Image (cartoon, rainbow, N blue to C red; front, side, top):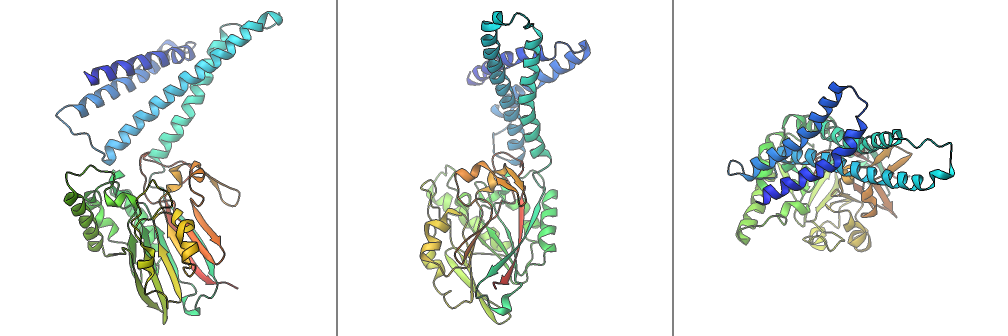
Length: 409
């Protein structure tokens, strides 16, 4: 009954949106009108069929990558129809206001042509966002962009000048639909011939099993001195209803074990000291810690930092960039660079190098993409390797960061 009620609501919505759509195509040829009408209603038929299929016993609704992509495309079509109704109502209000004063303009021809013009304008204004967002799904999901950056460090030991670090973040393996496009990203990572590779959290969306079909790809990542990682807020299973506390713990242990199998060194409030050219580097990994009360705080930076004091270079992996202002800068000024992710750059925005960098996420996070500096400390926020929710990207492409350290003059 609930499904039937939902389908009736969708039908009513479609009938309302069809009125301006029909008006906009009224001056087309009969065959074109027929084709566009079939295309319009095929979306409704497809959605109802899809809902019926996933609500039956034949299939279990899930959050797999393919499910998410199809669901998102339906969402986008109906959001476009919502915009069509909105703009139609807005133009109708304008027409009403104009008709109220038209008697003051005797030479003004207020004919039905304006209704058709407004309907076509509404179609255009609702259709452009739809096409852009679908393009973001079909073209940009795996269109990896390599960001090359040089960071000058004051007091950097001479033996560490030129150290190359590759960072990726927010893989969100549960969103993937195909293993093949991922291989291109791994090739780009390995082409950098990094000394170190850092992964800064959110390997999965919800559960550990999401990464397992892709371990044969991600275990190919290589670095001269190792691959190091930390957990993100999605890795703890906090967004799943578990049958027991033990099940949640078992899921986390499975994720930890998978990272070890891939050859990654997962740092959970701990550090590793490595020697490069006779100079000591501390790689510090803290569990997820956010400056926002919306996210759990698992991080214990004092514990993670302990024992790294003698290192000539201190590098911190912390998933959430809000941790930088909340604790790192004030309490741990000796940390040279913090590597974060989490924001995805909202997967939507505008970036013109050296001219403009904007995304709606900037109103949530002060540091949301790229390099930031305060005093002698740096923060780098990676835009993410994968995607979550909307299975695509518009303007903010998936990122592979290649950072080279230099001695500051």
